[in-house]
Amino acid sequence: YLSMLEGPFWRQLRGAGLTYDFDLTLDKAGGLIQLSLSESTDVAICYRAAVQIMREFLDGTRTFNMTDFTAAKSAMVSEIVSESNSIEDAIETSFSEYISRVPVGWNRASLKLINQVTLESVQQLAKELLPQFLDPGITSTAV
Image: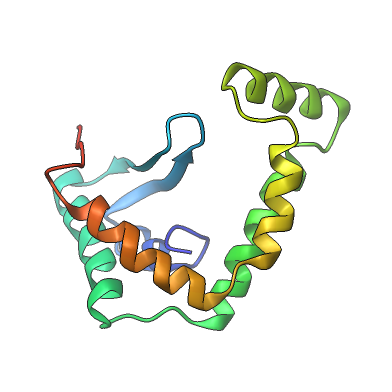
């Protein structure tokens, strides 16, 4: 949601010219959420802006909306499906899952789970995870 095309990060970070590329990803094997900012004009300002966006979702200044939520779910499904567009892609995905010790069929199971996600569950999860992401005691930051 935060990092999707035309999402909050896209509009506030890229749209403001703070960074050309950003990504918020899940390290499936390590259980980590990673924020990457690249080709930034000023990485410190860009990072502070990203943190501010997350804080605004926590304090209610910003809210999750159904249109963006539906678009984010569709983008996730599209990304997972595109990993198996060809036999070569399917083999690469399977090998990557094996090396990362991700359970067989993780992508297929993910598609089913994405369908079950509700806007309310995303809001609740944000309340649980974003404070951890913003806590310097448990977050690592590297430049």
